[in-house]
Length: 243
Image 1 (spheres, rainbow, N blue to C red):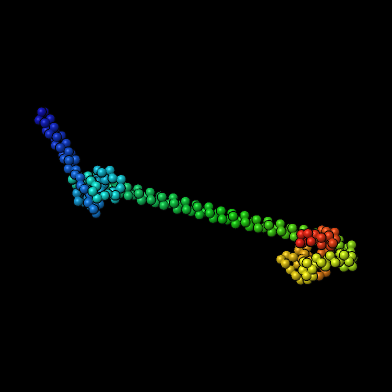
Image 2 (tube, rainbow, N blue to C red):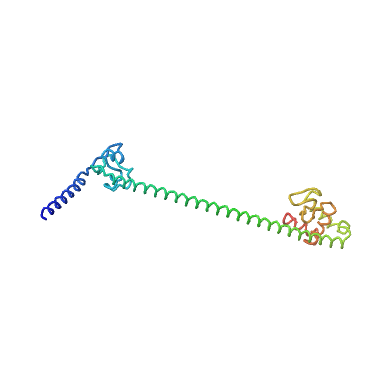
């Protein structure tokens, strides 16, 4: 019984000594120019992971000349190497999986942003088209209203007067010719943008009929409805430069 205890105690001491020897064999080296962790690991028959663990290295690719590195003096066992390799492979697989997931997430985010941009572009195009149609319809409605008013005034003038040249007085005729000379030099064919003819009337007033007769008729109607007489129109022209 005592012998067994002695042997057990001796085995314990040997085991402790062996463990201590492994720990005591840990050594330190000074990093030289051109050294890498993998070079040092191969030189001292250890692993990159072991050096990283002993020195708490955050980045095994970042060491500096003159830096002191702790290394293990003995090679690790096959089981340790296998375990280290398994851990490294697992970490590599995890990193690859994380990279794939990040890439897939970035691609999905890019596709979503592209789809959103296309949807916004389509919405803006639709809004612009609707605004253009509304503006065109409003212009057409205004032109139709102006045409109706011009036609009504022209019809009323025609019904109440036989001709404009025979019903105006000498003063009215002189004022009329004066305005015509200022506006166009008396020409029925002069154009200036939307203003046409002897009296430089708007195309909407003439309603597409640019004949001399229609110009005379519409001018008479315009002045009568706006100023009451050509003399008044002339006075307005003198004050403002237009009638």
